[in-house]
Length: 225
Length: 225
DNA sequence: AGAAAACTTAACTTTAGGTTAACCTTAGGC
DNA sequence: GCCTAAGGTTAACCTAAAGTTAAGTTTTCT
Image (cartoon, rainbow over all chains, first blue to last red; front, side, top):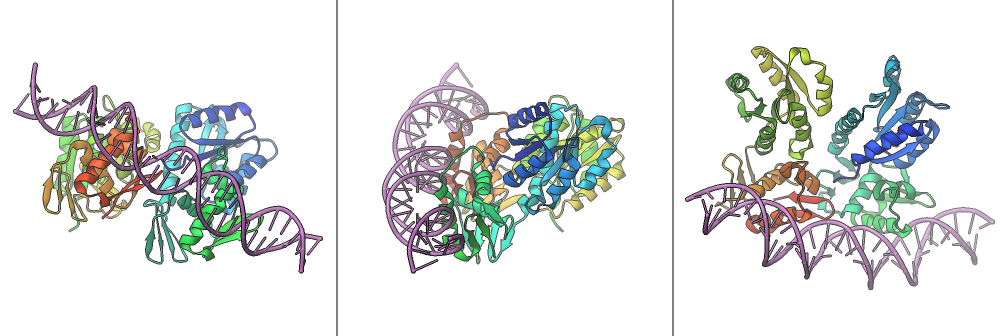
C-alpha cells in the first residue's frame, strides 16, 4: 500500500480522542492527537497530516480559529479539515465552511458513519494531488508510475529515494527539517540513524543533479529548481 | 467516431435491465448487465465500463456495498457510478455519495431523462479511452475472448493470470501495489498468501516475456512495453 | 468418478536497497 | 584562521521483499 494516511484529531476531551483514535487506527490510519488548538497547530506543522478533525468547542483557541490558521500555512494548504460539532449547533456550519472546513461530523459520533465519511473525504482529496505531475527544473515526477524523468531521461528511483523526492518537491523552496522528513517517510515510531537521510539525499543529488537539493545547515534540506 | 462508451447495469430485476439495455443501446452505447452486486463487480473488473448504473436495493450485496468495493479497485477508480433508487428514498443519497456515487436516477425511470443524464455524466467524465483491445509491445489482449496474442501467437491464459494481465495493462506504466492487486483480483475479504501474486507474475513473465513486467521493490508491479 | 488444469502454499534462495559505521569535509561562530 | 559540530562520502553489512520450485488443494471438464 501507499503510505498510511495520517489523521490528526484535536479535541479537549481525552475520551473523544480515544474514541477517534481507536476507530481510525482500526481502519489502518496513522493517528496523532492534540488536546487544544495551539498544540494542534504545532503537531500539524510537524506531522503534515492528510486530514484533520477539529472540535469546534475548545478552550483557548477554538476550532474555527485553528482552522483559519492552518489554512494560512503553505504546507497545509491542501489538508482536509472536518469539524466535530454537536448536532444542534449546525448554524455554525456556515461559519465553518467560511473558515475553510471541508466537512462536518456531528456528536454523538456514529462510528460507522465516521469511518465512511473519512474514507470518502480522503478518496476525494487523494486523486487530486496524485494526478498532479510535478515538473520543476527539468525534473518530472509521476507518482502513479513511480517514475522520474530528468531532461527526458527516465530514471527508476528506489522507494525511499522516491518518497524523499516527492516530499521535498511537494513544496519547492520550503525547508524540511530532519524531523519533518523522518516523520513523513519513516513514521513517528521508527528510528533510524542521522546519516541515513544524508545518504538518500546524496543518491538523489547523484541522480538528479546536485544543484536541486540545498542544505540549510542546522535546519534541513530544500528542493529548488 | 470515438469508440462506443460502455455501460454496465446492475439490478436484480430482469425487467429493469431490459428497459435500460433497450434505451441505452438505442443511443449507441455498449451495454452489459449483471443480476446482482457480486456479479456486477466481476463484470466490472473484466469489462472496465465507463459508467455503472447500480440499483441500491438488491439482495445479497446491495448497491452501496458494491459501489464501495468498486471504488477500491484501481482500474475502476475513475468510472462514473450512478445509483438507481425509488423516488422517496432520497434520504439514502447522503450515504450514497459517501459510498462514492456520482449521481442518482430515480425510479420510475423516465426514459428521456435517463438518456440525457447519462450523456451529461459521460461528457463530464471526459474523453473515453480505448479500452477494448489493448496492444502494447507485441502483446494483444482481447477481453471479450479471454485471449492473448504475443507476436502473432495465440496464448490461452488461465483466469487469474489473465485478470492480472488485464489489470496491469489497463494502465501501462502505472505501478500497482500488492494491495491494489489483491483488491482487484481477489476482493477485499479474501486472504491469500503473499507469494501467490509472485507466482502468477512469474507465469506471466514466463509466457509473455520477462521484460514487460517490472518489479518496484517495496511498492508493487508495473506493465511496460 | 477420475484426470487434468488451475490455484495456493510452503520452504528455500536470491537480491535490491536500506542502514550503519567509520572516516572525511566544510561552514560558520569565535 | 581555528575549532567544532553538522553534514558528506563510502563501502560493508543486513534484512525484508521478491523469485523459485515443487508439492499440496481445489476446481473444472469429460
